[in-house]
Amino acid sequence: MKSVLNFCNSLSDLMFSASAVIRRQHFLIRTFANPYKSQSHHRTIMQETKCMSGNNSLEADAEKILRTITPKLDLSRHKGQAGKIAVVGGCREYTGAPYFAAISALKIGADLSHVFCTKDAATVIKSYSPELIVHPVLEESYSVRDEDRKSVSAKVLAEVDKWMERFDCLVIGPGLGRDPFLLDCVSEIMKHAREANVPMVVDGDGLFLVTNCLDLVSGYPLAVLTPNVNEYKRLIQKVLNCEVNGQDAPEQLLSLARRIGGVTILQKGKSDLISDGETVKSVSIFGSPRRCGGQGDILSGSVAVFLSWARHFILTGEGNLSISPTNATVLGCIAGAALLRKAASLAFADNKRATLTGDIINCLGRSLEDICPAS
Ligand SMILES: NC(=O)C1=CN([C@@H]2O[C@H](COP(=O)(O)OP(=O)(O)OC[C@H]3O[C@@H](n4cnc5c(N)ncnc54)[C@H](O)[C@@H]3O)[C@@H](O)[C@H]2O)[C@@H](O)CC1
Ligand SMILES: Nc1ncnc2c1ncn2[C@@H]1O[C@H](COP(=O)(O)OP(=O)(O)OP(=O)(O)O)[C@@H](O)[C@H]1O
Ligand SMILES: [Mg+2]
Image (cartoon, rainbow, N blue to C red):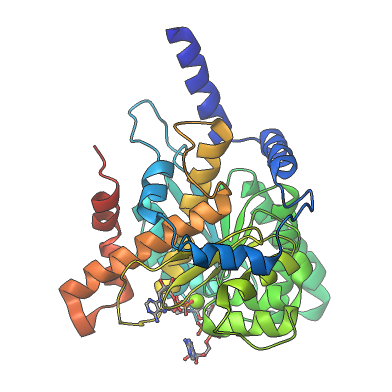
């Protein structure tokens, strides 16, 4: 029995540090197991959301989900098994956003957090924290001659590709900026991530890119979009060709996720609404009335970690599966939103009007400990 258990443990460890082949197998299993892919929608969107709001099941049991998917701290595990995250973002204007996302991933429990940014941003981000692994590989138009664009683009891609298979999730967009050459390179990075079945959380300027080129994520079930009010408005206008409908928000979100081929969308706001085109859930845990910039960046880093943990939990069949919904991307969003909101409320209790994003990051550990104690 013990040897069987040991075997299972080793197998599970192996799976988490997944090779490309295993990732692909997992993806196939998940794809065929996903009713979305079978196109068998037995209920209409209207029936589904009415049914959900009718029995008040829109609100997720977020704390239970977070507790369930968070791995136990185990002395037998080695570095990397609790997750390796990479943030693609950081340019001349923005160095805070990628830092917030990457450091949040570490504070929550990922073992390694990388940042792929421009040269200008790299030294600054490194100086914020020695914990982050910072790659100064991205280039903006101003630093590249027209005739060098092709070769520079290939070099950028090669630099990121060297690491791609090692990541459990990418966060694309915090502080990326909107330089056209840089965004072209990031499009290529996204295509490679998709080929390698690496999950992607797309936020900030990554959403600007995706809204203008939906094919980058369309039909990719491992993509998560985390739009704020503005980013959501732009997505709705582009995809559904209408305005945001505050009255039927869950229904509209469900159709948006369906129209983008079953990606998961976390619509940030007073309540966070989450849908993968199959189901809609909300997270309304009390947060903070302060709307300081950077909270969305914490969220993107958090979702990346929880998504990786949820995937591991589901793919290895570890623990009990008594949670619903069962899509890892949705579970990651629910847990990430819950943790951020709780941390924001703790930070606000301490700092009131002076609450800043750094204060919220400092409360991530306490917030996690309240929901899911380390021992
Ligand atoms: N310290 C930093 O480096 C930060 C950088 N950030 C980055 O800045 C870039 C642009 O992100 P933004 O969030 O500013 O882009 P948005 O398109 O959301 O915001 C653009 C403008 O809309 C306004 N706006 C924002 N939220 C609104 C709301 N709820 N209702 C009405 N108007 C609203 C803002 O004041 C801003 O002027 C991204 O790359 C993002 O990641 C932000 O994450 C904030 C922190
Ligand atoms: N009106 C609100 N009331 C309560 N919480 C909110 C409200 N709006 C947003 N939040 C919380 O703040 C988080 C970040 O949302 P926000 O809209 O600030 O993102 P953002 O604009 O992308 O942030 P960033 O400045 O990092 O780019 C959300 O997940 C949500 O939990
Ligand atoms: Mg944002």
